[in-house]
Length: 354
Image (cartoon, rainbow, N blue to C red; front, top):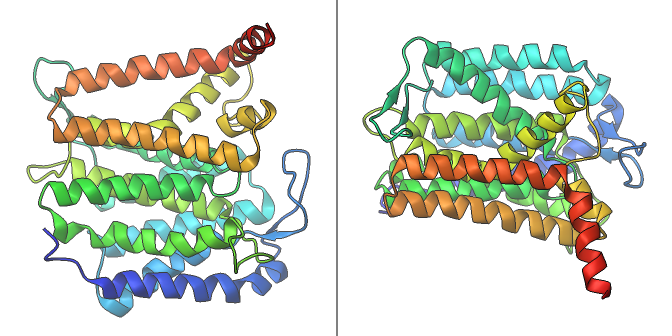
């Protein structure tokens, strides 16, 4: 099962990420790629937004040095380069939501149309046989790619959250690849994991890294979102698929549900679904009295639970329609709870005082 493991690409990505995280900090200030506190951001000082650029750079350098590539590697790195540049421009100039969305669809088109990495089947989610796409699979893939990119962009609200959620998803993917005897495919996600780990140390100001805080930035959250959806589509489609599509949906379930619930709430209020606000899951935990650390730990634990459902369903071969409708019910429940969260919290606090 571990015959295809090669630690050189992993170590290369890890150490290159450390170097890039250090040397890019002064350039971040010169280029204006820094995050300043404002009404929605309460951190202190001007924090570099180069975490994502360093992760991207580490992965691409490790691929060149060790000759270990993603499938359709040249097209993947073309799409990744464009999404990172888009993120950097957004970090620097705060692009309009519509312009950013249009560019994201362009990147998604590279994946679906140029690389031919698109969704052809959703599996037996109805219980009456596999649901196959024709040409509409291309358009469905575009929507899914843009959705996942924005799901990881939206969840990037407190230190460690987007990076931690990415690690959970990628580790779940690696586990299922190993379980399906597809160990030759694990090096791509492993390189990304190796590049994210040192970023987490800087981002969370762990011992030895204090005073050097770095944020992921839009470039980073969109890069990991693109990477994850690229891998999940690749590993769930075709005759040699390593996992079923519904398992992949559960693995990234929490970011998807948070995005869906937020967009539903905004649409219900007549607001733009792309307008940022302070009503994400991490905002709710903070307003409920949780510290940043407790909020992070709780949300990542929730993310682990969703990923474990996907892994368990895959290992036990639970029918796809059972997993699909379970996800839909969970999504509805999640949305309803978030719509009524303050009423629920007041009820709980009232009964705790009695």
